Image (spheres, rainbow, N blue to C red):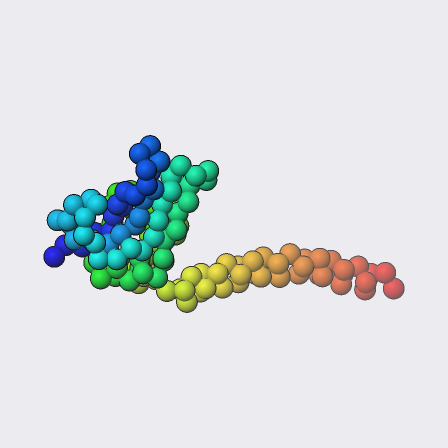
Length: 129
């Protein structure tokens, strides 16, 4: 069974609202589904996008394939990036190591800058007395 994360239409004529659902790929658009994981209202300003991030990540980990429109919604919410970082094996510790490296290089630059000033003030003090 191939599982998809996709939209199903609800709402009145000319006023579309969508649910983000998990369903078998073979079921019709407004037919049988497994789970509702969010909603999307495109006519609101700004568009309302509510997706249960934990459930969406869980289904993506299980192999559910998002449709193109749902993939765009997941990118806007930030779920897709979280999934991609988990998939590639990057962990928060790796990103904090990168931050530590950038802090170290900043500290190195800061320690380099005061050192010439400190050397110049040391040179001036012995010359003054």
